[in-house]
Amino acid sequence: MAPEHLPHLFERFYRVDPSRGGGGTGLGLALVKAAAEAAGGSVRVWSEPGRGSRFMVDLPAA
Image (cartoon, rainbow, N blue to C red; front, top):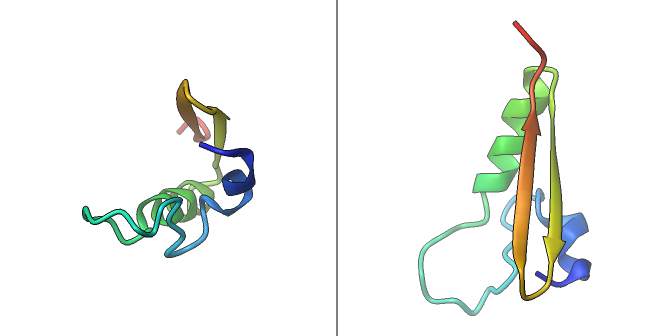
């Protein structure tokens, strides 16, 4: 994924490739971030173009 997309990934309805015909509304990552933050946690992403992306959800211990 290109670096210019990273700041927007967790925005509602943001899609990296809006021309893709397959499903997806751009809500999934926004919901993950909202749920993590509501629980006192956070979400991070690392991406290397052509190699893939990694996501980490940090949640406080119960």
